Length: 200
Length: 314
Image (cartoon, rainbow over all chains, first blue to last red; front, side, top):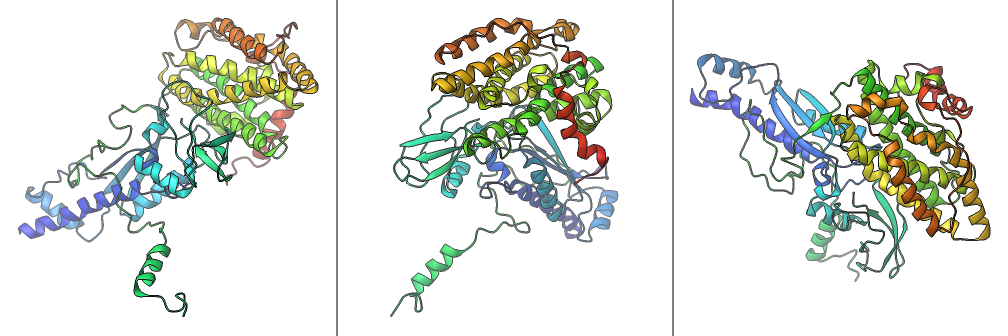
């Protein structure tokens, strides 16, 4: 009896966690080494049971609860709904729709029956939310990560380290680069141009 | 005996490891790098936001679900139209910039403006029971509330920079004021857009200085560009379209921004060895739907595809 009750409840819980992991691992389409979590685009992921309103989620539930649980224990996690909140980096960022579609796809692949992705503008996204791991990954990928924090006036000169030879002897060629979030720099030591992820 | 054909076991392992592709996994995702501080979730529980998730704990506000009143929607439309027409005009420079980096810079500015326009038009759409696309593609000239300055042609590089300088400086002050708006959503859009507009001002003022304090020709053209745009500046600071909203704290009093605008501009022009133009203002009625002949052509190009194929999607 105890094992029969436990089985249907563990599956949805595992699936819920799988959904959360899948969403957190969705990659930025433009910089595929970073996940949307690394970038701070992902604000929250919530997974709850869809349709059934009084799921208590308790393993030792009353008889009715057990019956419902067993009724669903066909390996189908038809009852899980994911609510994901994301925030755009730059206002005109064209990747947001792709990210939204990717999040929906990832959540469904991990077992969500319904996915709803919400876009919020406030508080405004800032590079301060980028994780240290994210910055390290950017650097390995060949893009210089944001140097410094967003608070304060924009400085015209920021010490940007070349991601290739790590020299600080770099020059900004243009504040606007290949995407809205990047600027174009050139290293005066190794002479290679590179993208810099702007502090925002 | 080469190592390529007969690798040692160590080399083979190293090679295999080095060449292992970082797969873009969808079935078995890599666990996130940040440690999860919570236990296994149960069905029916609302998962808490991971306290280590950046931005966590900061309350989420101002989603697109807020619905503005018709007046506020009209104001959002005004702000959005300025940004939309700016974006459309700068978009004309795609693949036509004087050099590659500048092409990218000006079109990135256009993209930022378009992003702001979308946020404003989506919000206006909610209050007017329509969509951003309907507003952008199916309104006629008389329904647009953009100012004359953003409708001006790009002309030569001096004119383009002059236009971007004046528009972005105005927007910077306007959005800064909007941060205190009693309308939560407008304040949120302003907070988002001001960071980008700061870059636009920086770009335009750097070029203004470089052109003004450059060669004789660049100085002449930059001055001429300023003078061409100057008649349309006064209209930006006219409060009459939104006096009620200013009183209620939703809108920013543009007239109140004029002094700082002039001060900032004079500072930039002095560094650029340019002079503040003394040209009478044109009569600006853009906020009331009366536009220069330019807008018709701008809208024709912007709207033709949507109007030829209404309801079409990618």
